[in-house]
Length: 99
Image 1 (tube, rainbow, N blue to C red):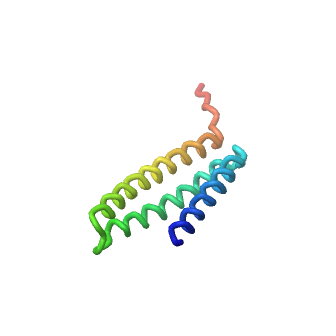
Image 2 (spheres, rainbow, N blue to C red; image 1 turned 90 degrees about the vertical axis):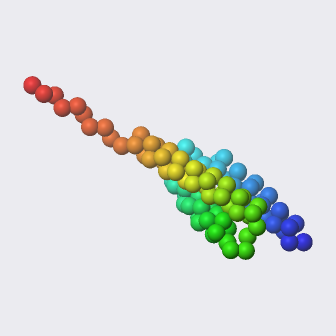
Image 3 (cartoon, rainbow, N blue to C red; image 1 turned 135 degrees about the vertical axis):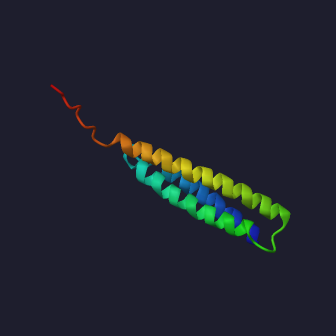
């Protein structure tokens, strides 16, 4: 029963997440990207806790390490993309004319 409920919640969250992201206007992509970066940071903390558990099996530690690496790559690349997107909206200074 517990696995069925977890699978149901996962399927519902995946569907709602897909629909939410699909309907976001392009103007709101930068704030949405920042929010997903915060979620990735939470995933990194959870993966570190799982990897460092004293009573964890070898499989748990290996999967936890993979989760740490994948979440960290997602987090760093997300911040780099967000920074690049924000730089597109900054006003450029006019070149100074030297006489």
